[in-house]
Image 1 (cartoon, one colour):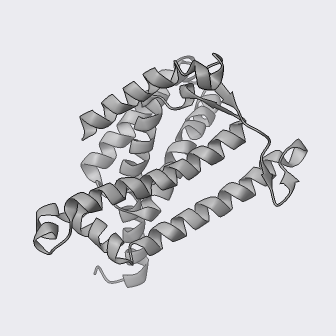
Image 2 (image 1 turned 120 degrees about the vertical axis):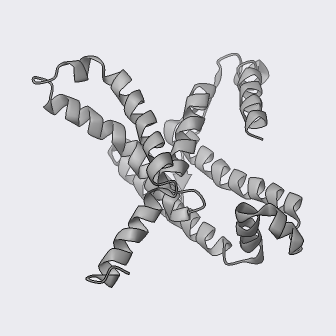
Length: 224
């Protein structure tokens, strides 16, 4: 499935770059100004307006995902995730469940893509490369597989990581000038190192670390 996903992304990029009938040969699409409840987004409050919209959209998406796991469909997702053979033995339609998982995830991704298109005012294939897909996968790994909260933690962590590294390189510019000169390599190296460290030492990601911290505070001074 991983190889098929990789192949489909390559094929989609190949087709989209040649969609001259859709893009008029420009290679991108221009979006109309975003309006909400009759208010057109723009001007000096553009970033503030979009922050509010994205915050509400993200909150609703997290709420919907968390409540999904309380339904029969969500329980079948967890059963297939943990052990598909055991789930099939209990009467879960594994094929249907996997297709539904793809459909639900596509709905979330479609919403995110629509918001991204309106925020950037353009839709271009250059923003949806293999590197972008690897970044999203890394967010899930670092945040915690099978965790809604982990998706939020992982996204925040990997978005803030380059900014923290950039600030660190500025602070240590005089002491270690190589950090600034080779910052792109440092960023890629740190990105890969974070993924490897999480896979080795904490495969369940930041969500598990947060749970351990809460358990420690809850049961302190006892060990368990």
